[in-house]
Length: 175
Image (cartoon, rainbow, N blue to C red):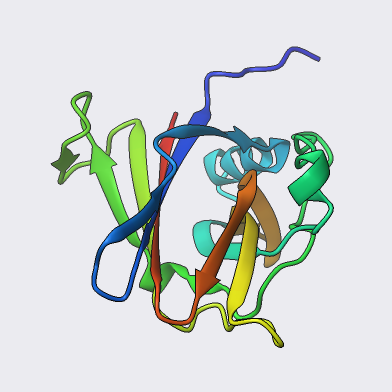
């Protein structure tokens, strides 16, 4: 089967301290568009009961990734995060915007979509006995026939988010 690979994504994480100071900035990094995204798009084109982005999930991944490095996700077989935090962030709490070729926000649909999630203080809740939540993975999810379908996934070096910090996660999808 021939793969169409021109759907791609990038993301950027910015961790802000209690006073608004930037503690960490990942810069723009590629993420993995998974095959279920293509199935979701095909369902939309065929007028199936397909829904676009429904939520963003974050997770702690696996602690061993801190020493071995996170394995690259298999875009064909991955359907879920390793350790998803609940509750997820619903689309109503995400900011979605179309971008033009200069990355400026525009009103009408384009082939570039930006999704911004703000993980406010105390989300996710720190894991006792420590005072941080170790973030190592995230993914966007849509739905087809009321079943969750992963759109993209990223595994990254651990970010220890404490209860007073804010993480701004920006994802850009290019179709």
